[in-house]
Amino acid sequence: MNGGSVIIAHAPLFAVAVIFLLGLSILFFKRNLIKILMGITLIEAAINLFLVSTGYRMDAIAPIFTNAPEGAVMALPTVQALTLTSIVIGVASSAMMLSFVMLIYRHYKTTNVNRIRGMKG
Amino acid sequence: MRMTKVVRTVADLLYPFCMIFGLYVVAHGHLTPGGGFQGGAVIATATALLIAAHRYDDVSARVKSARMKVFESVGLLGFLILGFSAIILGQPAFRNWMLSRGSLFNDSVAFGVNPGALTTGGLMPLMNLAVGLEVLGALTIITLYMLSGTKEDPS
Amino acid sequence: MRIILGLTILLVLGAAFVHIASDVPFGKPAVTDMDDYFIANGQEQTGANNIVTGVLFDYRGLDTLIEATVLFTAVLGVSVMFRKLKEGEQYEND
Image (cartoon, rainbow over all chains, first blue to last red; front, side, top):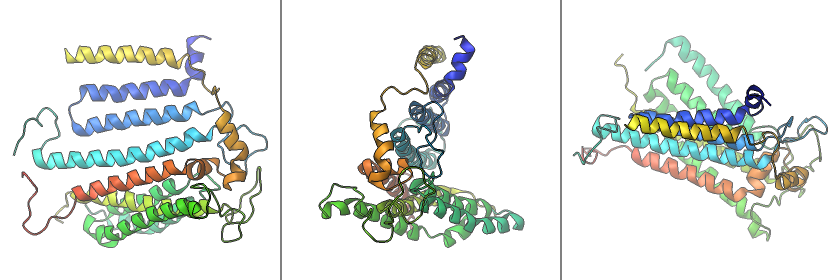
């Protein structure tokens, strides 16, 4: 296989790599707490996409029997259920983190991590 | 911030449809894609729609966060009770003991590919409903509290 | 200095990811015994047409319970942080 067809055949995995690296670069280079939270959420999205893509079979349908075509291959259900768990926990943790950022902003009047130094107040 | 009258009217019109669609997703969780978590999130989105169109104070008077806390607690408690009710009956936890027993949701399921009937599934629809209640309460509370800090225009 | 270090880490990680991603077979999961069992017996044992719901609420019901508890706890934390202040009460350290 040449390079192009490898990328086409493994497109979700490459998308996972790109999204993960984008999130990581935001974590490295940005100093704003809101943007850091966006980076964390991007990494979360990459992990979820990776989990779902591990459970995919070629030409498979979703594992639901309602009005399904006869004799079709079904994708693996367990990773999908666990991804649902992961998404909900991601929502909960990002809500917590955003509340912390709002409290930090109320206290320090800034969201730049370089200026949130020391024990002010 | 308060939008124009057109936006407010359309948001008021779309609000019940958002809720109905969320309830549909919750109620058909055992038949079609969706379930408690997704449907609850859809219902919570309706509140965000209202806040986007109206002033925050008007919405928080309409959608009471105390009521949402009750929803959330009742949902989690119901899920707990439904999950561990199997232990009381001497079966493993989270076993679907209601299946083919002869009450509300116990029509026998057709195996294999079938069109699907709402009255099947035993404990599944009840658990979906409980989780849907919990998630709708939780996400609505999060939306209300997060947006409580928005600056209001003095108009 | 920091930028060079970060770029180096990103490049190394990116090369590793591309290498792995072009190597792992996509669409052909290696071990599928458990999921095949769920697909074959899930409808009969859990009574749900949607196998994902069956896994979520029956086979792995305890996971879902803990997950719902995590969401509940997060909402508890948020509502503690944003509670209404009493008359004359100040935020601490303000």
